[in-house]
Amino acid sequence: MSTVSRRALLGGAGALAIGAVAGCSSGTDGATTTAGGTTGADPASAASQHLPFYGPHQAGVTAQHQPQSLMAAFDVVGADRDELRATFQTLTEESARLMGGEPYPERDPSYPPLHTGHVGNPAPPADLSIVVSVGASLFDDRFGLADRRPIELRQMPFLANDRLDPARSHGDLLVTIASTSQDMNLFALRQLMRATRSTLTLHWMLDGFTRRTEAEPGGAGVRNLMGFVDGTVNPDVTATTELDELVWVGAGDGEPAWAVGGTYQVVRTIRMRVEFWDRVRLSEQEALIGRRKSDGAPLDGARELDEPDFAADPDGDVTPLSAHIRLANPRTPEVAGQRILRRGFSYSRGFDGAGQLDQGLQFVSYQRSIDRQFMPIIERLDGEPLEEYLLPEGGGFFFVLPGVADEGRSFGDGLFS
Image (cartoon, rainbow, N blue to C red; front, side, top):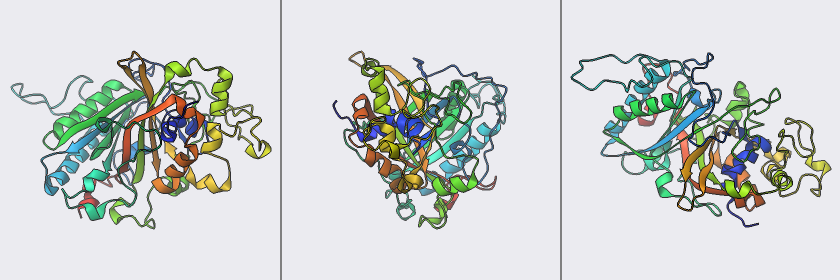
């Protein structure tokens, strides 16, 4: 087998395995086979609600995984420090209005309306979340913020066989929008863009989907586009202690004071070579991943949530030594602190010039430390056989701003203090 990239792996099926399959890190990542980036979730779900905007952390990081997601990276143009601060204030006000479901005022019809109108006014509850993050480039010499940069925030490097496209990578700001409806995500994006059009321009954008299926209690209930259950073992988003340990930056981490309560965000756009994968024998697919395709159980287990016993299989007779779940999470005490919170989604962008489907996984993870949690996982995955079917093409490293405590505050206000 040829080797593509450890990062490719982590992102694509790696996302698959690192999450669903590897209990080392995981998340409810996207999984269906919809051609247009929309999937069979009911946008008018009776369970939909308005998520809280104000709080110590941005709610979208730990909210229940919504079926539709959209990421948009922006560059800051033609702005000085004061204008950048005003842009954050505008993003705060608009995000609070959108997540709270507040109606937009109507105005004289001789002027453009203040809202798009395509989801109604007010917009219906849709579990809408908006997460605002910053990239390393925001801390260059344009705004006098170089000494405020989070210590591990840097431009995501090329790893192994990455094919990162600059047009699909990095950015000054990243906005992650998720809800029950693609319409709602597009509405939120357009409202945010019209409010910040004088200072923000789009750098890249990707939308996609996550469809939950039947699963055993506590299981992931999600399959990615390779057909495997994805996201079996994620940190418990209701456990404050666990999130403080694995996700949120703390006061003793050596970070700038303003960054406490934020989290590092890793984004990997991983294209899957689905036509090739679909021609691989089932037995080989399962050996590459380390789990059964039918129910997500480890190869030495009976159920999805069974813990693989690698110590009882030292030679890899049951679970190959090169299986993704074994490399990503060896199930040793040394890797227990390397778990990450995964919230990726599947995507479909039509086809390329060779007639090959452009489908894959937008790998998204949140962690307290890139260097102590994310990078060790990637390094173990370097050169794994699964990489043959994955190609990382974009994404970046970002830092999720701490939450907005109350109406008198704004995104990043501590950054400018």
